[in-house]
Length: 150
Image (cartoon, rainbow, N blue to C red):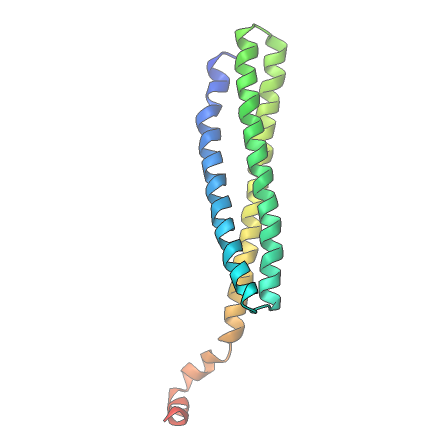
């Protein structure tokens, strides 16, 4: 297989869009961290908040790895183009393979972060379900609750 100048150039828009998506995830996590920090400072320290903080710390680490691998893949694509320009065939193949592997690992880490994000949302939903567990039965018997409220 021959790698032309256009081959690594195809990675530039894909990696740029991925880095944009990763940055958006980072900004969303930063917002959540600030919100949880405010809740913690106000004294709303409970197990759910502490679990969310642990989850966010792990997710921030994953996003950092995703961004680092994406940038590394971008750099490798640039070096691939440089090695093609200098007609270093074996070097360009090797560096391009590293760029692709770095991009692949970045995507796998992204999948792990998405799974962790889903777990965090399930944790939040389980807390809501705990508070509303008995509200379901109250809704089935509206007459009984209305008399107590009046």
